[in-house]
Image (cartoon, rainbow, N blue to C red; front, side, top):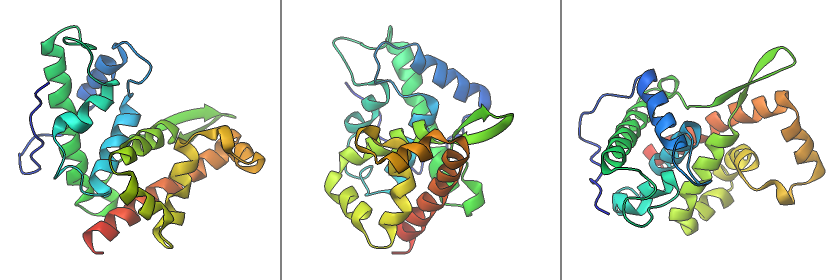
Amino acid sequence: MDYPQYDPQLDTPPLDDSELDALDSLLQALPGEAVMNIEALDGYLTALLVGPPVLARLRTADWLPAVWGGDGEGGAPFPSQKQRKRATLLVLRHLHAVQQQLQGPPEAWEPVFSIAEADGREWVDAEDWCAGFLQATVLDPEAWGALFDHAQRGPLLLPLALLGGDDAGLAPTDRDRLADPAQRDALSRAVVDGVLALNEAKVTP
């Protein structure tokens, strides 16, 4: 399947709220359990930008189909090539918008996290976003492994791994943290700090 190569110099407008909703709806209408929602997509694209420089050496076809669970026979999973093209262009535009945000001041970056309601309050919940972020790490597991093992940067990524990773092997204390909306909120906010630190380290090693 041929996909346009991502060009970070191409001046494209960021998606507005209606376009983000349209992209999310387009993806969620596709069959399969591996399709990303808009939060996971945002995390996935962010990892492509702040982690090892995979975008410079991989074809778009090497990373983009993971957004919808992979390409199947014929046009699958899309019902038409028109919808595939629309999804591709929207994803590439959002990738460019995230890159532009990350190149600006820290407050310019606005990750797409979920908001959960519990006990009459709203809590930030970055679980889906973190799961998408971690999915991008399989594109260069050796380099990402070194980042997670890094003495300074590794601990900053622990909240991300806790929220987005497999909970099968978690200690009871970590399970309790994830079950508490207030602690999930705190972990989600810590994810922002960790990613910004990783992004800053990439700009100035």
